[in-house]
Amino acid sequence: MFNKILVLLAVFGLLVFASNARSDEFTKEDLKKWREAFMEVVKEGERLFHSPLGRNKVSCDMCHPNAANTHPETYPKFQKQLGKVVELRDMINWCIQNPLEGDPLPLDDPRMIALEAYIKWERRGVPLAPGKH
Image (cartoon, rainbow, N blue to C red; front, side, top):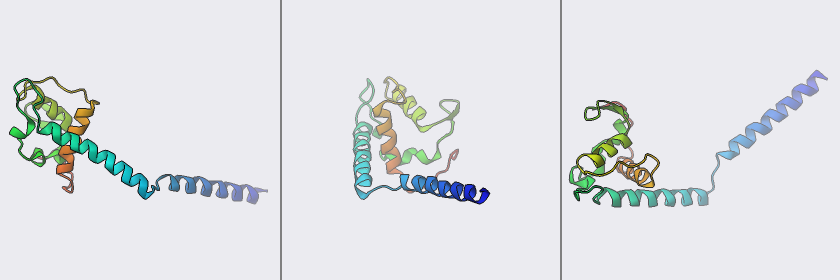
């Protein structure tokens, strides 16, 4: 009887493992659809990065001609302007509020997500280096 229980548990374990393993398998169509959705957000972020986001008509690219020079791979890090360790989105809002003289974006705002996606896309392939200056 004990052996039957062990066999049943082993079979059950294999079934659970197999179903979990398949849950991470994506079709080519899935990957294509998701990539296209992501790239649409990146494209919107690029548009925003090169557009005035505040009241004074200044855009992000006026200080950062290339979004990659914002070094998103170094966040979170201590940011002197804020006096504490912050994430990239905190620095984006600081820039919107100060040099651009605009209103901060809520962190879940699609524009914030688009700006982060574009900035990080421009720096793709660079190893993560949190805390680096």
